[in-house]
Length: 179
Image 1 (tube, rainbow, N blue to C red):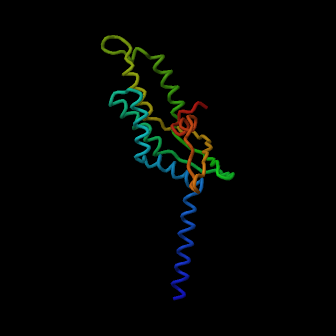
Image 2 (cartoon, rainbow, N blue to C red):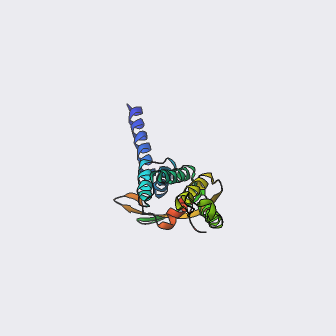
Image 3 (cartoon, helix red, strand yellow):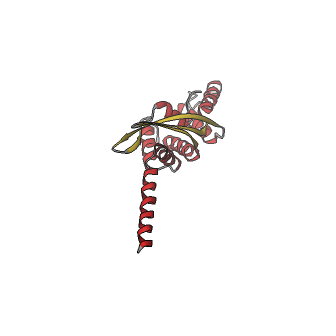
């Protein structure tokens, strides 16, 4: 009987510790980044909503989706620090992502200096051809860049929540931040 009692107490301690570990600022940031890594439905939905707002045709929207889902899948990160001050926290993270910022610069330079390659059958510049080129080039990017991000969190009812990401944080996750 004593063994069962101690086993129950031990299981309760492990369960309690496990629950509290899952509610730390660091664990919440890791959950967020893992949703990106796994291309979770919520991430796909947010990306789809954003791409839909750009009024792209289906092929180009699908192409951009492939580019960014690859970015999310291949994103790596290292948690550097966690600072807690009452019900607020900051988790510092270093992420490594494809360098789409540099790639976009190179693509823009190429398109500007080779516009004749992007003419349609009517000898008029085709933004559609340039967009297809852009997406094809982004799919080939292999160079990576590292960014430091500070995620802010707020504790409400004893649960840590990652605050809404800023445009700068999203640009870093997407690899489009101007460095």
